[in-house]
Image 1 (spheres, helix red, strand yellow):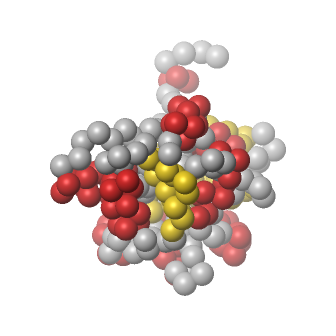
Image 2 (cartoon, one colour; image 1 turned 120 degrees about the horizontal axis):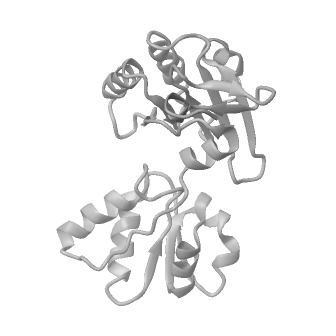
Length: 233
């Protein structure tokens, strides 16, 4: 959490959010009016927050950054219908940047972020994006790779990406980053399926480009920015 976000919570009267995320900031909730909800309640959460915001200072919590598969878009869509404009979006630390820091420097060139969840986006569209990102040789970050009910999409995603990227392409697997049980694995695209069972919804997968390489006893990934092409070091 950023200092700016923490200060916003300190000044808030109401704090709304998914129970999972509220539990992570429990020490900051003392003295606040807390309204908990669960996955699937996002629209009601946004509506309630805007209703309360007419007379109170309200914060709505989002995991990572509110603009990356978070609540920012939905809150503004609901606000648009109500013509409410006094809304501040505070940036956060999202899974791709936190995971990248733990894995070394895997995203210092162009990258694409793709969620494998098909709750709001049809799987056929997700597959088109996977093909396009792999064909363009982006570093690819996979969010929401596998849930208890949705297990097949990740296998298909890896098959799609493997059509365009070589088996030796570095892959970083980051789980529970900044939380209890933080864990990372560095492997390759060709060896990824050995770790398939370790992946869940708390996992972010970073797949390198053609210049990415594994370094430091196979626990770091480097994707060169391009300085080596212009400078000697």
